[in-house]
Image (cartoon, rainbow, N blue to C red; front, side):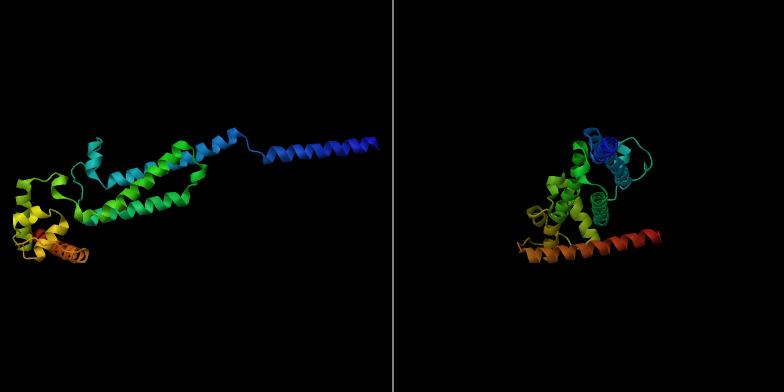
Amino acid sequence: MRTLQAALLAAVLALSGCHAATGSSTPADDTARRAAETARLTTYLDAEYEKELAMSPESLTMQGRKEQYDKLDDRSEAAEDRVLEWRRQSVAGMKQSFNYDLLDDDGKTSFDIWSLELDRAEKSRKFRDHQYFFALGGHSLLAMRVLGALKAALGVAINPRAFFADATVSGIAIALDAGGTTHTTSGTGNRERNRETLIKRRRRASSTSAAEGDAR
């Protein structure tokens, strides 16, 4: 009888030990899981960065790479919109594929930075048509060239005073809407309508230039 009781006790203790061994997680195991998840994220972000570089020949060239050595960046609004949409998809894919709580500190920093880049791009997009010409490196001589190009493309001569009063895309739209001769202050609604007018004119001018280029 005592032998049977001892055998049963030994079996219970053995089973308890197995359960504890399989159900517990050591600090070393936790560190390994975090390192593995962070490594996966790093691989993902490295691949995404390569995609971003591929959209900027000038950035590639600055890094000494010659895949697109003979090209310049596309600075059109359409190109900016494509990059922004790609960034949205990239961040969405990251958030769907990786467990933030399972990343180590370095991984969380990388995750946060990539998300922040999208946030900055979204906020910058809202003010794209309100960037001040002279804050972007423009000067009076370049302003005259811009006004000359606008006249050649749109057939409207903008008074330099109107340009200097509001040297932004929205300001130019207002001046064009006024026939290029005066600068007027308008509410947000008018600015939006004028902005759309300018965008349509720019698109028509771009289409005309592209058609002329194909003809040549």
